[in-house]
Amino acid sequence: MVYFSKWKIIFILAVCALGLGFSAPNFLGGKTAEGLPDWLPHKQVSLGLDLQGGSHLLLEVDVDVVISEQLESLVDSMRAELRKGRIRYGGLGVSGESAKVVVRKPEEVEKARNLLRAIDPESETVVDGNTIRISFTPRARADRRNAALQQSLEIIRRRIDETGVREPTIQRQGDDRILLQVPGVEDPERLKALIGKTAKMAFHLVHERDIDKDTSRTPPGARWLPSQELGPDGKPEKVLVRRRVMVSGEDLVDAQPSFDQRDNQPIVNFRFNARGGKKFGDVTSANVNRPFAIVLDDTVISAPVIREPILGGSGQISGNFSVQESNDLALLLRAGALPAPLTILEERTVGPGLGADSVAAGKIASIIGMILVVVFMAIAYGRFGLMADAALIINMFLILGGLSILQATLTLPGIAGIVLTIGMAVDANVLIFERIREEVRHGRTPINAIDAGYGRALTTIIDANVTTLIAAVLLYIFGSGPVRGFAVTLAIGIVTSMFTAIMLTRLFVVTWLRRTRPTALPI
Image (cartoon, rainbow, N blue to C red; front, top):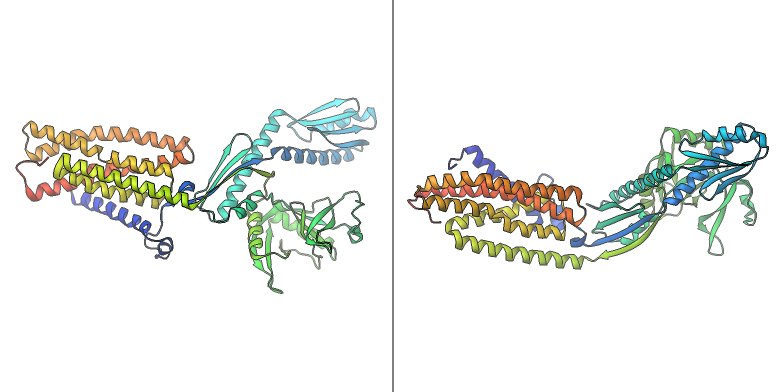
């Protein structure tokens, strides 16, 4: 145990150097660290919401809207099937939690029932006289609600990732809620605007009667929608569009902010997939010189006139945007539309001042803990205790470097994990030094005592640390938020503590032993 090969010495020194190198940027200013060359370590520890400040939002997903929309889609499918079967009907629409239709002729009820039953295999059909009701089964409703929540979770994650925020916490709570914690957000209102927009985009043809602007009359198959443009009275103008969606925003594959080459105004360039590009080309080819409304969340962004067929599967959206608005719109379109509206149930903003106080308190606690441990080890074990103290200081740099490399989020409980690690880091050294003392009392020579002390204590040290490491891993897997922050620092601290106690401190001891060759151990 007192023999060290050269490759072991090189390995230990290399790990220590890397730890010091990757922890160094944390002692520089943020801008200074970002300005370092890419080949140098430049990443700093990512601070969590409780340390850096930021926004905490609890969102509710209106999953009932998804069920309602799917019932409306079911009504459209019923209409198509009944027309295909040449069945006369009336009263077609959504009633409560089902879609219903009244068949005119009693002898056609069974035929209509067979046609409608095949529309959705996850629905159940009920016949009451001439009335047929179709509703989703309880399991199908639950599956659709769960799918809507999961899709909302993924869309929110994409939108947050597009803003460049590091280490956000986005997790499901219950059957219809999402917890969102975003550290370091400087503009929480913009964040809420990005999250709150459903961002459902569609392309509709403008109705021929729109030129009359008589909103008291709505032709069949059309509806009035507000426009972003304001009228003479300062209120949004109304645009009459056909209900039929000519091209859906679901077929978008990319959207990027840009500037119009003619007037240098901010615009958004978009591109469809193959299916959407074909639809877009067919619609624009068949409706040249007609206005084509671009609708986002039931608001007409713009309604340009189709001058010529657009066959490339791409186009642009203009609407008197600011640069920020065009960037946000492109971000929303790229991330995709939310399946249901979101409601902010709870909102908290953590100021950076509170986080700075927490960091300062954590530093003080760490320094006091470090001083007490260093003094105790020096008094209890003399020269050997000082070697353990040097390894403890290097251990702190290794933890900081590990957090920087992994870009793990440091939270307030994470600081508690670091303080705990300071106390635990010398446990292994205490076991080893006490074992060496026992061997000395039994009359062994210094070399034999050190060799036996490290050899016999090694199994106990590994067992104790591995069990703690398993607990930390389980905390990380099954925990969330602050619990994970504690688990990360604890796990990193256990690994670095074992390295410094078993390898680095032993290197110090063996080097001193070879140079001085003492007849008695000062321990």
